[in-house]
Image 1 (cartoon, rainbow, N blue to C red):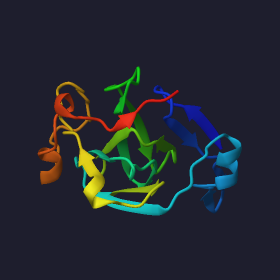
Image 2 (image 1 turned 180 degrees about the horizontal axis):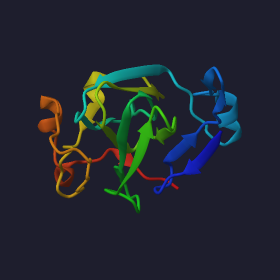
Image 3 (image 1 turned 30 degrees about the horizontal axis):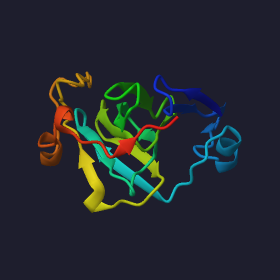
Length: 184
Protein backbone atom coordinates (compact mmCIF):
# COMPACT_ATOMS: atom_id res chain seq x y z
CA UNK A 1 0.00 0.00 0.00
CA UNK A 2 1.48 3.32 -1.10
CA UNK A 3 0.26 6.45 0.72
CA UNK A 4 0.92 9.76 -1.03
CA UNK A 5 0.55 13.16 0.66
CA UNK A 6 -1.95 15.40 -1.10
CA UNK A 7 -1.27 18.91 -2.37
CA UNK A 8 -3.05 20.22 0.74
CA UNK A 9 -1.84 18.73 4.05
CA UNK A 10 -4.31 16.19 5.44
CA UNK A 11 -5.43 14.90 2.04
CA UNK A 12 -4.03 11.49 1.10
CA UNK A 13 -4.02 9.37 -2.03
CA UNK A 14 -3.83 5.67 -1.28
CA UNK A 15 -2.62 3.34 -4.03
CA UNK A 16 -3.04 -0.33 -3.11
CA UNK A 17 -0.72 -3.12 -4.08
CA UNK A 18 -2.52 -5.00 -6.87
CA UNK A 19 -1.70 -8.63 -7.64
CA UNK A 20 -2.49 -9.86 -11.15
CA UNK A 21 -2.46 -13.38 -12.48
CA UNK A 22 -4.25 -15.36 -15.19
CA UNK A 23 -7.46 -15.36 -13.11
CA UNK A 24 -7.61 -11.56 -12.79
CA UNK A 25 -6.47 -9.46 -9.84
CA UNK A 26 -6.59 -9.14 -6.06
CA UNK A 27 -5.99 -6.18 -3.75
CA UNK A 28 -6.83 -5.05 -0.24
CA UNK A 29 -9.16 -2.08 -0.53
CA UNK A 30 -8.84 -1.44 3.19
CA UNK A 31 -6.47 -2.67 5.88
CA UNK A 32 -6.81 -0.89 9.24
CA UNK A 33 -3.48 -2.20 10.52
CA UNK A 34 -1.44 -1.08 7.49
CA UNK A 35 -3.05 2.36 7.54
CA UNK A 36 -2.45 2.70 11.28
CA UNK A 37 1.23 1.84 10.79
CA UNK A 38 1.37 4.64 8.22
CA UNK A 39 -0.06 7.07 10.78
CA UNK A 40 -3.69 6.97 9.71
CA UNK A 41 -5.60 7.29 13.03
CA UNK A 42 -9.22 7.08 11.85
CA UNK A 43 -11.88 4.40 12.25
CA UNK A 44 -14.89 4.02 10.00
CA UNK A 45 -18.49 3.56 11.10
CA UNK A 46 -20.46 3.70 7.85
CA UNK A 47 -20.01 2.73 4.19
CA UNK A 48 -21.90 4.54 1.42
CA UNK A 49 -22.24 3.78 -2.27
CA UNK A 50 -23.70 5.76 -5.16
CA UNK A 51 -24.27 5.05 -8.84
CA UNK A 52 -24.16 8.04 -11.18
CA UNK A 53 -24.73 8.61 -14.86
CA UNK A 54 -22.04 10.27 -16.97
CA UNK A 55 -21.95 14.01 -16.29
CA UNK A 56 -23.46 13.85 -12.80
CA UNK A 57 -21.78 16.15 -10.29
CA UNK A 58 -22.36 15.41 -6.61
CA UNK A 59 -20.83 18.30 -4.71
CA UNK A 60 -19.65 20.02 -2.48
CA UNK A 61 -20.92 18.27 0.66
CA UNK A 62 -19.90 18.15 4.32
CA UNK A 63 -21.34 17.83 7.82
CA UNK A 64 -20.80 20.50 10.48
CA UNK A 65 -19.10 19.70 13.79
CA UNK A 66 -19.62 17.80 16.00
CA UNK A 67 -20.96 15.44 13.29
CA UNK A 68 -18.19 16.04 10.75
CA UNK A 69 -17.12 13.16 8.54
CA UNK A 70 -13.85 12.03 7.07
CA UNK A 71 -14.30 10.00 3.88
CA UNK A 72 -12.15 7.37 2.19
CA UNK A 73 -13.38 7.40 -1.41
CA UNK A 74 -12.88 4.79 -4.13
CA UNK A 75 -14.44 3.89 -7.46
CA UNK A 76 -15.87 0.41 -8.01
CA UNK A 77 -16.96 0.96 -11.63
CA UNK A 78 -16.17 3.79 -14.05
CA UNK A 79 -14.13 6.85 -13.16
CA UNK A 80 -14.50 10.22 -11.47
CA UNK A 81 -12.83 13.53 -10.90
CA UNK A 82 -12.85 13.75 -7.11
CA UNK A 83 -12.54 17.16 -5.43
CA UNK A 84 -11.81 18.28 -1.86
CA UNK A 85 -12.03 21.97 -0.86
CA UNK A 86 -10.36 23.20 2.34
CA UNK A 87 -13.04 24.88 4.51
CA UNK A 88 -11.01 25.17 7.74
CA UNK A 89 -10.91 28.74 9.12
CA UNK A 90 -7.34 29.93 9.50
CA UNK A 91 -5.92 27.35 7.11
CA UNK A 92 -3.27 28.66 4.69
CA UNK A 93 -5.15 26.61 2.05
CA UNK A 94 -8.65 27.91 2.91
CA UNK A 95 -10.73 27.91 -0.28
CA UNK A 96 -8.12 25.92 -2.21
CA UNK A 97 -8.93 22.52 -3.63
CA UNK A 98 -7.33 19.35 -4.91
CA UNK A 99 -8.64 17.20 -7.74
CA UNK A 100 -7.80 13.50 -8.04
CA UNK A 101 -8.69 11.11 -10.84
CA UNK A 102 -10.07 7.89 -9.37
CA UNK A 103 -11.12 4.92 -11.44
CA UNK A 104 -12.01 1.27 -11.18
CA UNK A 105 -8.87 0.67 -13.21
CA UNK A 106 -6.31 2.61 -11.11
CA UNK A 107 -7.97 1.54 -7.82
CA UNK A 108 -6.61 4.61 -6.03
CA UNK A 109 -8.46 5.98 -3.02
CA UNK A 110 -8.73 9.56 -1.79
CA UNK A 111 -8.76 10.36 1.93
CA UNK A 112 -10.81 13.51 2.55
CA UNK A 113 -10.69 14.43 6.26
CA UNK A 114 -13.24 16.53 8.09
CA UNK A 115 -12.79 20.23 7.38
CA UNK A 116 -13.04 19.68 3.63
CA UNK A 117 -16.08 19.96 1.37
CA UNK A 118 -16.18 16.94 -0.95
CA UNK A 119 -17.64 16.21 -4.35
CA UNK A 120 -17.08 14.35 -7.58
CA UNK A 121 -18.00 14.30 -11.25
CA UNK A 122 -18.86 10.99 -12.91
CA UNK A 123 -17.00 10.58 -16.18
CA UNK A 124 -18.64 7.30 -17.28
CA UNK A 125 -22.16 5.86 -17.37
CA UNK A 126 -23.06 3.85 -14.27
CA UNK A 127 -20.09 5.04 -12.25
CA UNK A 128 -20.18 3.42 -8.81
CA UNK A 129 -18.46 5.26 -5.97
CA UNK A 130 -17.99 3.72 -2.54
CA UNK A 131 -16.76 5.58 0.51
CA UNK A 132 -16.10 4.86 4.15
CA UNK A 133 -17.12 7.52 6.71
CA UNK A 134 -15.71 8.29 10.14
CA UNK A 135 -19.12 9.26 11.54
CA UNK A 136 -22.74 8.51 10.78
CA UNK A 137 -24.93 10.59 8.51
CA UNK A 138 -26.63 13.40 10.46
CA UNK A 139 -29.21 15.23 8.35
CA UNK A 140 -29.41 18.35 10.56
CA UNK A 141 -25.64 18.85 10.16
CA UNK A 142 -25.36 18.38 6.40
CA UNK A 143 -24.47 21.37 4.26
CA UNK A 144 -23.00 22.20 0.87
CA UNK A 145 -21.30 24.84 -1.22
CA UNK A 146 -22.46 25.32 -4.80
CA UNK A 147 -20.47 23.18 -7.19
CA UNK A 148 -20.19 26.00 -9.76
CA UNK A 149 -18.94 28.66 -7.34
CA UNK A 150 -17.02 31.32 -9.30
CA UNK A 151 -14.67 32.02 -6.39
CA UNK A 152 -13.56 28.37 -6.29
CA UNK A 153 -13.52 28.08 -10.11
CA UNK A 154 -13.38 24.27 -10.19
CA UNK A 155 -13.13 22.68 -13.62
CA UNK A 156 -15.18 19.52 -13.19
CA UNK A 157 -14.37 18.26 -16.70
CA UNK A 158 -18.07 17.95 -17.58
CA UNK A 159 -19.67 19.71 -20.57
CA UNK A 160 -23.30 19.30 -19.54
CA UNK A 161 -23.49 18.83 -15.76
CA UNK A 162 -26.39 17.04 -14.11
CA UNK A 163 -26.92 18.16 -10.50
CA UNK A 164 -29.57 17.71 -7.84
CA UNK A 165 -31.85 20.59 -6.82
CA UNK A 166 -30.03 20.67 -3.48
CA UNK A 167 -26.65 21.07 -5.18
CA UNK A 168 -27.98 23.67 -7.62
CA UNK A 169 -29.27 25.79 -4.73
CA UNK A 170 -26.29 25.45 -2.39
CA UNK A 171 -24.65 28.50 -0.84
CA UNK A 172 -21.77 30.48 -2.32
CA UNK A 173 -18.33 30.08 -0.80
CA UNK A 174 -18.13 33.85 -0.18
CA UNK A 175 -21.19 33.72 2.12
CA UNK A 176 -20.27 30.43 3.81
CA UNK A 177 -19.54 30.63 7.57
CA UNK A 178 -17.19 27.77 8.39
CA UNK A 179 -17.45 26.02 11.76
CA UNK A 180 -14.18 24.17 11.09
CA UNK A 181 -10.98 25.49 12.67
CA UNK A 182 -7.53 24.78 11.27
CA UNK A 183 -5.01 23.41 13.74
CA UNK A 184 -1.43 22.42 13.16
